[in-house]
Image (tube, rainbow, N blue to C red; front, side, top):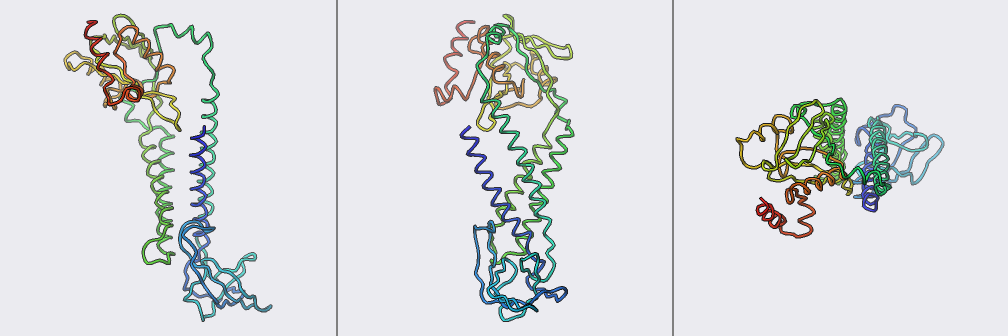
Length: 364
């Protein structure tokens, strides 16, 4: 929970700085040199300018903060501040300005105002995601120890876990397409922000506001890749741990028996979600005999590519189910399972399999 809160605080802070930056860019005029008398409410005479940045109320980046005396039909206003509207080049020149609900602006078009609505939409999406993650984290943290019924069910020799069909690698759900569209729109938005920073920069080359554009660009790329890779919901299969081997019963009625002599190893790789290990990837490592048909059977039904340690049997088994599966296998074939992260952390140097490997050889 502490890690989750710290991460959320950091992200909110970064998004707050990004929102301030984009708000400043949204208020920028179309040009800092154009002139228009149409609808002007007064004339400004610059009295001084200074550079603001790189971090401040205007977010990240450098911009001009100028003071000017504004002459209107009702009189002269002294010391009016203009943020990002005037520059030192305007000193000694009359600049037409307008009063926009009490705020004095350069009297030309301000076409980027819609950026405020765009960043507002993305912040709202982030808020919804943050609430969903908070509820999920709270649900995990409040889980209690399994009751007696769950403990009684633990003695069963079967466990049900999700599996992914080989042909499902080519599929992409509607939610994946929506996610891809969201990521691509974020990439376009980041490109526009980068162009706007380039147009409004007051430095010769580098402006820290480019970082905001870069962060949104990388975020859009990550979301796009995730959307393109999103696949259909995995099917489920029941795995019976028997003295002869591991019997797999698929939901469509098909199944097979994986004899212990054909398996080199069963590896469990926990996955992280906000620092909480809720699921595990279950991977099979067949014995290195291609002619036994096991490799072809795995490639034909389960995920056809190798994962970190072997063929991915289950992409996201719940951690309690994976732990139960591991203990059931160890009862029938001691030393067959591996939890590399746990074992490396416990013994180090990757030498976690030697003792069990010799024990299995002696038992055979």
